[in-house]
Image (cartoon, rainbow, N blue to C red):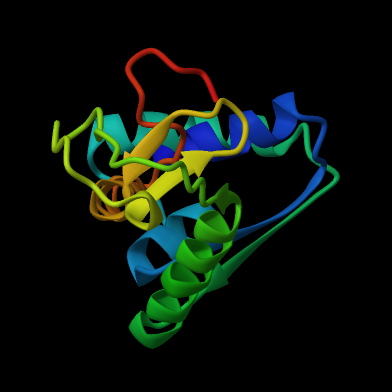
Length: 146
């Protein structure tokens, strides 16, 4: 499902050249159309992916090893954290995720697009969970679209 969503998002954003990184050989084979799934729900998702692929100019599946995935994950974490600015006010702050109301200003992150603030630990956990689930990390504030 993450693959289908990612390709759909790319098409929606007008992106027409993408790489698909697969960390599992079976998924790579399915995406390359070298094999077919015996499970109906997976076959339907792969059919949807192939249909969406036709709307792209180029798409290249790439098989990566576990070590490479770790590197990609760490690079993604660094990139996302670099997009978050540190806001340093005069008094301790409250994290709206963990409700800790005694957080030192230098331990708070502010999401650049919306200004919502969270403690470093909660932001790290949020980013990790979203990336491991195959999602795109967004502002963790309830109903925020940033």
